[in-house]
Image (cartoon, rainbow, N blue to C red):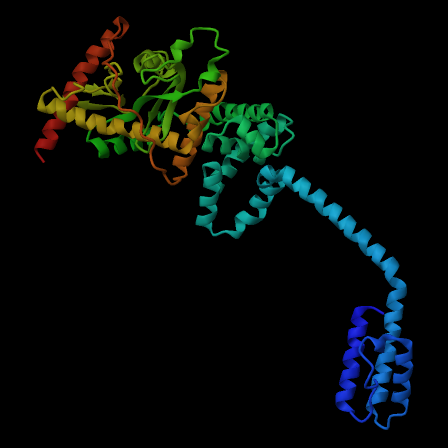
Length: 468
């Protein structure tokens, strides 16, 4: 008999003695150990049968039942024990295999297709809207509705590429890289994919953003409705009429390792701040939305050279862009113009300050202050761009793919601004320390007309504000 049965039987005997002390199931000299022997069992049975109380019969019946159950258990215990051992071994092996598998997959378990699908179809909708958008923004740099907009617009092109990953998952992966500045190697470890595949997907998605979505979300404000809205927005900010945009450049840092395949002089990428870069040029409206983007110069170039090499400059010089809005200021025919700092040339369609150090007349200094106030819009736009898409703080893609990656981030920036996404803390750009741009011989007529126009705007502004 096993120990459990012995203990149960002993308890029954002691209970019987307490209920029927006149009839003892055990002799006074019998111990608990002797009760398990056959001799003691026979004696106990005889005492039970000769008892005058009903209690001994009840306990004898219970004891017999327990004895039968115990015997049945002992017969089946060898096979059961073996089966139990086999089950335990099997469970242990399964657990070990599962543990091993989980350990191997643990770095990517939160970033698998299944985890992403659960997030998009279940978890995301269990959250309140503000929490849902904040959570998605922390992962991919933009809210869930904006994310779905990007996916829907890129999905046909990604599907046509026969990519083995779902379109939304591929887009999410690339957005995660752009938003957090992760390298292909770091992302490969997270998603359990090869680095070359991460680079391939990144190049595909950024190329689609920079080509397919660029015409839709980065547009020159030529339509009269948008032009009026933009010029009025700038006028409320600066008191200067007909400003349609603010221009500025920004150096996008690139790692030294990304220049190893450059066949020409690598020093051309060394910018004035001491690191390797490519130069970004943008024009923004009053809402900090870019309406022109150009990435054609290495970091060693200056803003004026980059501007002259841009398509925007050639279109403005040739008169290809027709602004359907003109006003008269002190006899000058003023069409919409953009504003920039002294690193750009003064032209009829580009107003710059009179002096970088406030050495002009009161009217000129007032004009400079208001012009730089309007120009500050594009500075803030670039700060938001780099704050949202941290990959632009230290670009970790190949130099050949740098322009499309930068332009893709500009497209995403516009999507965020149009959707009125919360603006993060602005990335602070280094203070501008460039020299005033010289005027080319081919620009002289535009320069002279711009000089007269700038002075007329300054005098008109001074008169209007001084009489208030």
